[in-house]
Image 1 (cartoon, rainbow, N blue to C red):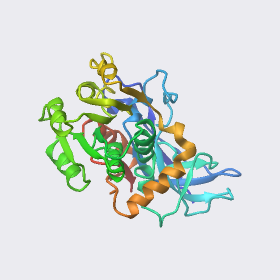
Image 2 (image 1 turned 90 degrees about the vertical axis):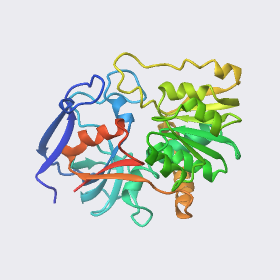
Image 3 (image 1 turned 180 degrees about the horizontal axis):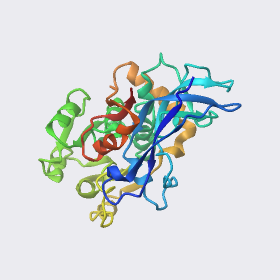
Amino acid sequence: MLSAENRQIRLARRPEGEVRPGDWEHVTEAAAAPGEGQFAGRTRFISLDPAMRGWLDDRPSYLPPVGLGEVMRAGSVVEVTESTHPGFRTGDLVAGTFGVQEHVVSDGRGTLKIQPDTASPSTFLGALGMPGMTAYFGLLDVGALKEGETVVVSGAAGAVGTMVGQIAKAKGCRVVGIAGGAEKCALLTGELGFDAAIDYRTENVRKALRTHAPDGIDVYFDNVGGEILDAALACLAMHARVVVCGAISQYNATDGVRGPSNYLSLLVRRARMEGFVVFDYAPRFTEAAREIGGWIADGRIKVLEHVVRGTVDDFPRTLQMLFRGENTGKLVLELV
């Protein structure tokens, strides 16, 4: 049976710059029962992603913004507690976009039933979820990766970045990661097998790229934008591909987004820069999950997760970790 109460996090006001505690409303309402053809579930894991910051701004994007007073949008894994849906039974684990709340009701559309013997449930929010799909299609389709090329990824210790580097290694490429701090850089070149790592906090990124990619960058996978994007553009190889996935360094900017000043390198190097949205590849997610799952099984990809155990009320402070560089790998809030 469902609990009588459902704790939720709703958007109270649109943030200006960094997201602050007062931007959220903590709400308790009665937990709903499933109607005909629906299931009810208890939230087990909530995904935290840099893209969430963009969803809070009222401006055109690939998804409508979260409305004021609405439950915060988020991917999550829920455990079915009650069901009148023929495809879901009590005890099933289901991944979907259920929002930041303790209890959900769904008709099953847009969800994925998880086989618990395949991987840990939280993995379906990371390596086998949107970050894994983003890395896979961004690198292989948009980046048109070829064996033997040099790949550079920024935000390399994050959920997407760790997957980009490991997929590139699995495809026979040289990989250079850019991350913040000696500990993260050591993780990249140690446990994750990157060929080199650059600490943007202590190193001159452009000079370091010249050292670690002396023949130029064939594929630059950009998660941060700003100064690091400019440095990478100055170090491109001929016919390079720049994959624009995100720009976390710009998401909290209050005086406008900084554009690339070295964009003429695209002309000189006959390169291209292309943005993408992973949802466009949804019909092929099963294909990607099958190959990623194989790499995980044979040890070529290590699943890296940063799990915070807490309650729904811990969502705001956990989200801030993303923009302060406090997480390594996929950031997940596990409800206890």
